Length: 142
Image 1 (cartoon, rainbow, N blue to C red):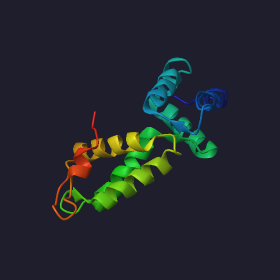
Image 2 (cartoon, rainbow, N blue to C red; image 1 turned 135 degrees about the horizontal axis):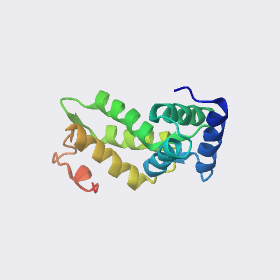
Image 3 (cartoon, one colour; image 1 turned 90 degrees about the vertical axis):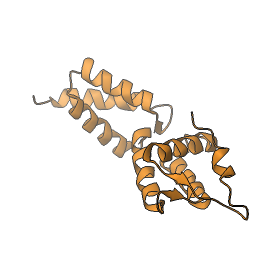
Image 4 (cartoon, helix red, strand yellow; image 1 turned 180 degrees about the vertical axis):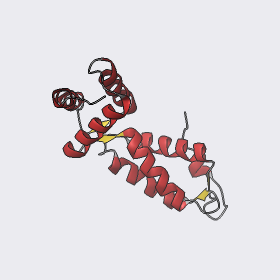
């Protein structure tokens, strides 16, 4: 089913309104936008996502799900035999915060990076003279 230009414009404006608080759009807000696109604007899920990502690209908005995909790719490159060094972990935290337009605190970014590592089966490399993973174990993973 073809989507009319009027519906596309109205949904695009709706996306802009939802992102007024800042450039970073968390997963909950992203889900709400897509649900409203399907229910209120009668868009297909793919059409809604396409319009939403187009608006995000034009306006410089960042979605949490996109930031996590990008950081997972970086971590995959870092993972040496499935292990990531402390320096690489800290670099990934910085990248993640930049991808999220600094809409996420450093502690929250660390938690999310650790979740991504756990989900992909990657572990922390031992660090320091004693060869511990204390730096990694200190990061809370919800």
